[in-house]
Amino acid sequence: MTGRDQMNKRSNAQTKPDINGELTYDDKVVQKIVGIALEEIDGLLTVDGGFFSNIKNKLVNSDDVRSGINAEVGKKQVAIDMDIVAEYGKDIEDIFEQMKEVITREVKDMTHLDVIEVNVNVVDVKTREEYEADSETVQDKVKNTAEKTGNFASKKTDQAKNAMDKGRRKADEAREPRVE
Image (cartoon, rainbow, N blue to C red; front, side):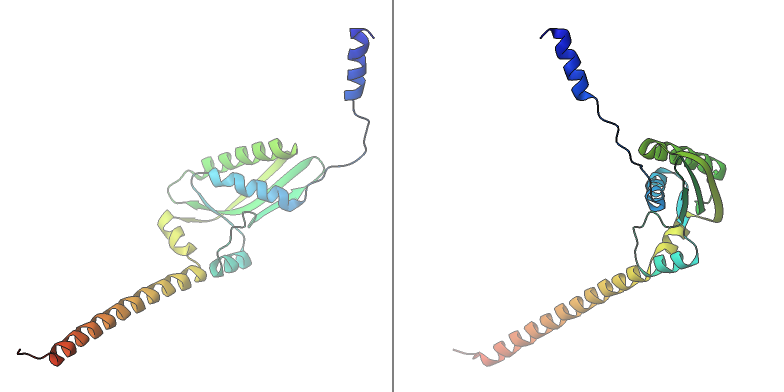
């Protein structure tokens, strides 16, 4: 067998037969890609998931990056809609441009789908301090209260132990004979 015959044999072995099938993406996959990608945008405080999402997020800590992102996914294209809260003092137009750029890049790189539309509705503007204060959930408040209560109880227990030890020492001193 010549070198050319061996190359042809290897080439034929490496070609794959045609396999029928289709690759599709669930909306929530694209929503998650977008949610993670948006974490790098300076000045974007949160994507607002609407009334019920906000209620849920006020009760329990949630790491659901898809919250508030609506994705319409077709066979070749994607459209994204979302409501956001922007940081006060930041250039909102710049935030929007950054969002479009990062969403388009990440969705394209991961899925090869074309992002044809990104609609952003700014529902609020807050300072970072306001946002952080508003972001404390009932779960956080309960945890903080439990920690404070635990610390208070621990402090009072230590004070009671010290008082008992002091009282025991005085009682022991009273039982010892004073003279030899």
